[in-house]
Length: 75
Image 1 (cartoon, rainbow, N blue to C red):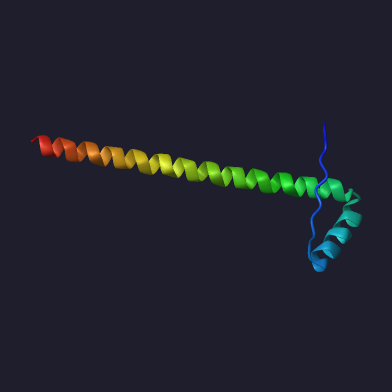
Image 2: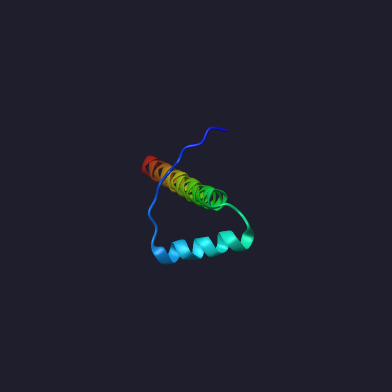
């Protein structure tokens, strides 16, 4: 798998917590950060999917409402 290096600055207290956790679980910083980014991306993609589903649902309700109005107007 090809890799890309990403540099980021994080607040020192967060970096210290990360260092402690990495040492405790005996994983590399790369693995912990990769897992964290993957989890964040998964969560954001799921939120976006939920938003799209809500829009589709709202649009279908709007279409149904228009059909009812059209039907009522035709009476």
